[in-house]
Length: 231
Image 1 (cartoon, one colour):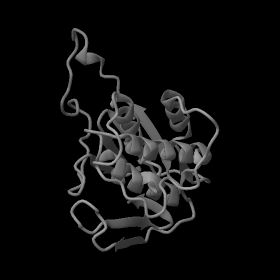
Image 2 (spheres, one colour):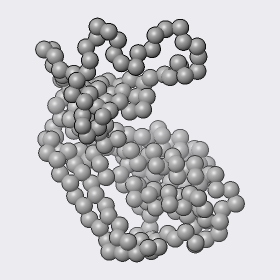
Image 3 (cartoon, one colour):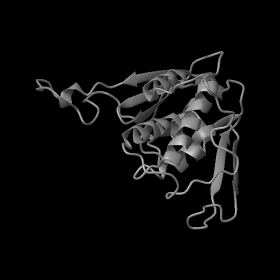
């Protein structure tokens, strides 16, 4: 996802056009009566410039300009040089709404932060959940949500450590994340069209912050211009 966010940041700053395609893998479920090319068909130009850092990215250059193709599982993001007056917003607001509905979160409580300040979770606190399925489903959905929500990345990392044997204390922590998202569902990543493309990185760590093995916990964030692309 870092490559995708970096590409969108460049597209926004250069004011190129951006297109998204989704591939339907119907050939996996039916009989084939046509040729399926694992390489570009004969007569079509081959994409050149495969990235050494990310082999899913390709660049094709011709007299008409440049085309960048980025593959992600069965999705493709294609961008070519064109004028675009706006930047881009990366939001998962609808996904959050669906997640809250599936979690059947009762009441209207909200939380100011995704985790309590200085809160430490341990594997042996609280009572084991009789049915851990819901805990695992919610945490799995939250992992996908970190694509656009770096503010929950740390706490999702924490609660993900207990999916094997979650307890009531861990589930309370997950509910707090959901209540925080209920109050902040409209937040999004902005890919500005007026940003520069200077790469900057920041990092910090605590001292022996993990209560289980006393290892330090490190955090980092990387900006491409004004856009956060990795954390």
